[in-house]
Image 1 (tube, rainbow, N blue to C red):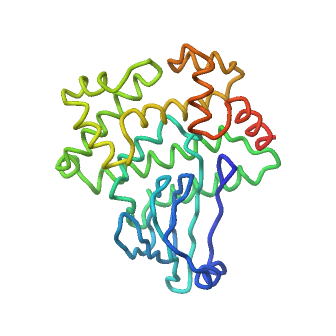
Image 2: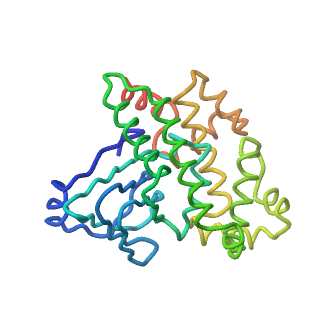
Length: 276
């Protein structure tokens, strides 16, 4: 996907197309949120399959292997598919990874809370249908959508249940510290010391949850923020690199290209073309 954000409504007419395709388990290079208002969903993710009846939501983080098979419920199927790149809501994305690790699917009751999720989806569809959609408005609506989903998740999974998994809690603590410090030129030992544990143990936890080392996660968070700044500001590449703890423009450009596959300047130009 080349766009920053995309949303579409899935209805019964699309089910036959999925049934006719191979529909093999696959991964994405973007994030995907499914909001089901009507119908069913057979979802293979986190190495097991779950069948859900609407209303439900499912968040598929980038790179996760999954397969979805939508189905009818009383002859109806209404499913919003929301796809976005990590840099679209960079301040939120890693927290989502920790919240939805091994818990991608969430069933709702058909109440006022879920009705508001549907309203937000419809508002995003409406904004994207405008001749010149305002992505800042869409970004705010998407962030609000995740905030409301997280509120429901906390009700369904009380804190005492969540805390049973010490690795997930440690990872959340690491992400909170990372969010406060990723702009600084701090290394692995800094974060391990903040968590009163060895770098080796923290690395093991990060590998288990995100399949990335601490260093890779730090660099990924810097990259997401760099992309966000390249899109939303007119700061120079050197200024952005310096803001993110890179004292050398050439090193920042090299690190960016290694992860993103293009230079910061090329990325900025591509995004401006896409949003024009």
